[in-house]
Image 1 (cartoon, one colour):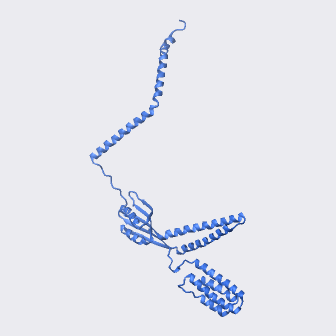
Image 2 (cartoon, rainbow, N blue to C red):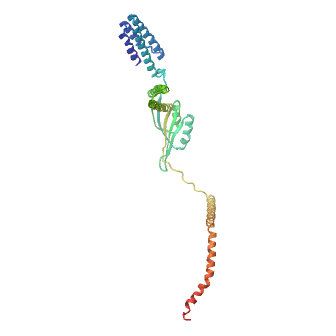
Image 3 (cartoon, rainbow, N blue to C red):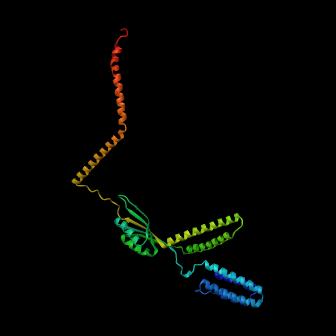
Length: 334
């Protein structure tokens, strides 16, 4: 891409007065860059060669105006080259690759308990962590325990080799996804957005026009910052995914789970348990009576007053009630 841009820019030179031989020599020289040169060195050399070509052009034309136009063409070429170099990661031949590893491992075991204890220990030794853990099973069915593990990439192979001896290997799958291009693409976009952010900040600081224009700049600045934060989040996700491999480990028992039969206690133990249960029952009964008394305590004074009132009433009307049959039996004429 940089070669095409440079050739196109140098192609302007013969149109503004450069001789055919000079233009041909400049184009041929620039189109063969050194493979081991850094972007900055290549730009310096291309600038020097373009300057030499312009010197020949100035000698042929003898025009000061032609030199000024050629200088502008070279400056444009150098700027384009610098911009294209900035979009390419430095030391592109030795960049760190970003690869996301994902694997599934299934083991068959006689008993699941040893694996339940051993797996967390191996994860801790590998300086990883358990992202998810589930266990399923019931009497008469196979028990299965599942872990989702995050293991550092450099220790992933040794971790898998340490896990395999825990049981019989039933399945192992591993996939990888190269996200190097996406990582450096997002990184370059972040750099460009930061340049845009700096430009907007500078415009905002120097702006002294209408409030409406200032608000438009602030809105655009907020949008750019939001895009930067979003891309930085994507960078963090890619770094996390590429630095830690994901392993889904399934450990399954060969046979169906049969719980142990309950142990029948001996006679002395049964006596002790019965005595203990009786004591607990008696204690519960006592607690219930106490609670009943407390609940009725507030009603006792009221019931006592009602009883006294009823006794007084009965004492006063009792004789009248006893004489009432005699009064009713006496004839009215007597």
